[in-house]
Each structure stands twice: as C-alpha cells, then as structure tokens.
Image (cartoon, rainbow, N blue to C red; front, side):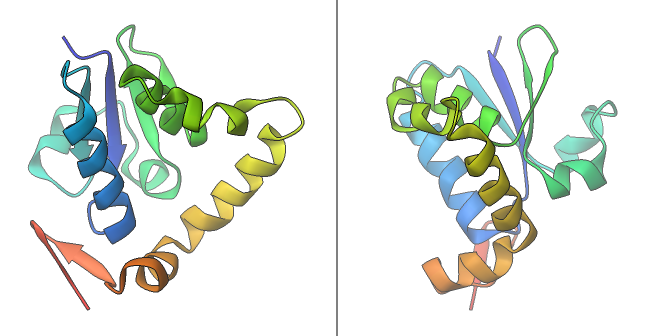
Length: 128
C-alpha cells in the first residue's frame, strides 16, 4: 500500500516534471501519483477536481487530506529528501512559503513556460 497518493495537474509541465522526478526517486514505491485529468482520477470521488486543480492535494495512508507545500514536503520526506523542503515548513517561513506557493499555483502554466520552455502537456507529451 502506498503511504501517499498525490493528485496533480498533469497538463502543467513543471508539475509533471516534479512528479516524474519524485517517482524516479521513490525506490520503495511509497508514493502514487494521479493526474487529475486522467481516467484514474474517477476512482477518488472524495477529491474535488476544481480544488485539486487550484492547490496540490494528497491523501496519506490513513486517508487524511494534505494540501499544498505540506504535500511536497511529505512526498520528498518519504523518499529521503525531505531536508530539501523542511525549511519551507519552519515557523516564520511557512506562512511566506505558502503565500508564494499559492501565487505559483495560480500562475503555474506561465511559470512552467518560463522555466521549461513548454506551455501545456497532453497525454504523455508537452508542447511549446
């Protein structure tokens, strides 16, 4: 059983890249990723598609909902790289990091284009 199921926007090039990197690092298969635009998403009626398209969502092994940067930190922690994201959860930094994340999430296609040179993904490919 997976310890974390992440629901992400597979049409976002940067999001898709991070999920791919995460899965490639997950040697213990602790994490499952579900593209909210895939057919597999229908198996999770408890996850609101609109909300999951606004902020990163995940379910832990107990079925608890985790959101935003808490998902990112937990995912990378499970694969042994949580130290990279731990500062984003520290008091005093957490509020600012969450504020920045919400701005990123709202503008993720534009930011993805700036950082990757691709605008949107469909299926298993991204295009300029």
